[in-house]
Image (cartoon, rainbow, N blue to C red; front, top):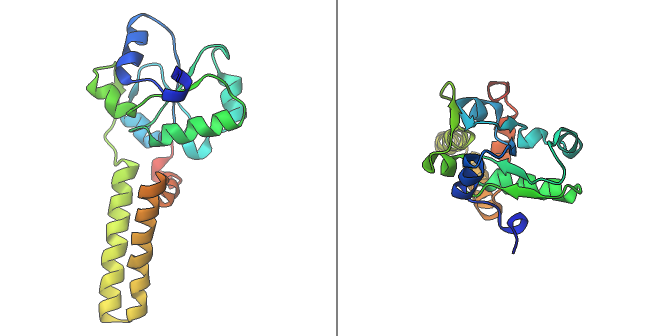
Length: 177
């Protein structure tokens, strides 16, 4: 398998950066996550707003790889699939995402601390389960469908590596620039 199929590790990416290469690096996390910490030279195009035509127009060089990074790799894989389906070539996911790059000591820009989408999902899911269970216990048993639906959504997210609640939360005003 080649680089396009397997992705690139944070260490390999660091080697390219250390060699002085100018890389076309797109971070698909939310603007709030990007502001908190991102690789030097990365530009932010959130996954929920990813437009393959815009990406193609803004590429530094169509012949060079386009590196896609997110928090831990999942959204990056989704973005790569979207871009490849739209016909873009040389799209490479950064395995392990920003977290792996931080562990590898790659150069980053840090900003204000924010709640990650993952933490927001855990808070929202926990609150919905707690509220639904309490209301179901004290008011109407039918309300217990709420925590059951949240649980089903979490199972779906785990199996498919796609989180509807995360995509919804990414559109909230506090997660936009």
